[in-house]
Image 1 (cartoon, rainbow, N blue to C red):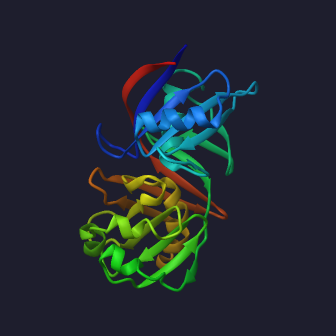
Image 2 (image 1 turned 180 degrees about the vertical axis):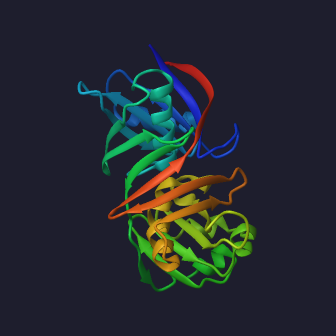
Length: 265
């Protein structure tokens, strides 16, 4: 059996930047164990599996090399890009995805921008977990809890960029991931962040759409803005346009296909 598979750089302005995701275009659903093995073989932060529905929408699931996750922004961006590029969704049509986080949609905006309609993830303050600051290697201003992740505010953009976590210690923090953030100090961006998730098999995720479902309401309230321009300062780097819309966050970014092939299984 040959199954189409593409690799797409998401939240990327040029090839080999942003966050790569594999997109597996299935004719019918496969079992979880098989999808997990394929994701481990792809060895990217996320592999997306798409199954068409009769109404033109798609079932969508996301897997890291180690686990299935409930929400993923960059692999959804990659999936919508792959569907439009292959003519499986009309260019002017909204892509609709049924996921563990409900119905998600993607539409083409101005230029090459793709906009994802995702649920906002509010956060609430918590005490700094023991060992977290030591694992991150930087002073922590505050820690907040949101869904599967923790938001950690640090003093400066420089602190975000220079951070070199102890991943063995960070793996002991009982959450999917830790997003570290500060207000941007230069350039066109409002905020900067990085995202670490060694507990689910990803030391550092290059660009994390789902984290910005938390970062957008947090910084939007503090900065008094509904539109934000964010930069995730990983080695690959990636830019995201954020817009607050009630209990939703609109995530904007670009995508570029870098590899096309087939799974022969």
